[in-house]
Length: 497
Image (cartoon, rainbow, N blue to C red):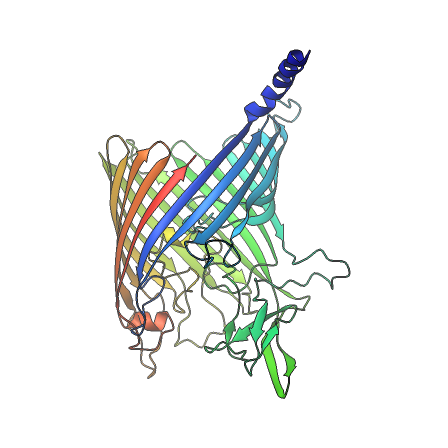
């Protein structure tokens, strides 16, 4: 009897197990940093470390439902400062947890003439569109990027349309006051203006000076950057509509996106510690006002000749509304690139332009374009000087680049060079009020990959940047305080199971 029950169990479970899959990733990256993200100060030494990403993914797929959950641990080797505990630096979390429900498809004959496929994707997910310029998963970062959102997805006769919505909140506690949102992971404790340690006030992001004391004019004290481009705060809500149409050898896409940021007031909290009376200064997010920003534009990808070896990629996006500080926006970005495939070589020549503010203009508008939630590492140099956590130049960026890449016949080995010429897009002032030279510097990236086997790949990167004096102004550094030649090397092992 027990054998019959066992056979029955496997007969029932086999269809389920056939649709259930598991996968994993272990990615280590050892880096030598001598001026990555910003110029190295003369008083500082280069850094050397190894970081690791570990992922375990469970996925289920049927004709009507897809489900995926990804657990992720990100850490620097030795970050725990212990071999027997994980109290310092545990980075275990949920990177993805979503389900996609098919509402109807071609098999639903009554609706087939209106839509080929309509689905609803709900939960924590990556938003990845086109070349990841504005919406991408930022996979280069060990922690990557994800959103808590709901996306309605439609396919019909070569058309694609995605409508996405997100609304962020800090807690689901009873009697929570309204929907005010503190848009960053705040340090649990902070030093007040006198140096006394105190719990961070609720609903506030404290500001601290270089000594770590709370200060009116200090920088935001957060556990980690809430976004790229030194945004300083996460969005309160987000909505987007993405539409694309594929033709024989071309693809045209459009994006309309609006994100809203909670308004704040500069506030302070009094702290009495014995005979000391100090203050915690910061930004208080307790306002029903939200600043709405709008980004919209088009991209085009098309082959320029019949052999499909020459490709044109172009795009233009405009930003209006208000930035997170409430300033009116009038900003744009454009991109143009031509790529050619010749035997085992691929060549690309392109130009990216990101608008900024003109220091000699009396305009009250903000002309700095923010490239939203994309993958800046992919476009503006591997050394991450622009539009990442370390911010961007007030004057915007002009990036002229050339790329060449070799791929072996068996596809196991590739190597390529990227050369970038960086300049300010708009004029800036020196300390003496004179115009700043627009030239920022040149960066050369050499990236090579080798596939060890079907699940493992090695990647080696050697990068160098030669900066001008203007780069110090662009990175808000004291003139003459940094080294103008920067270097970076990394070795990455990526194992996919």
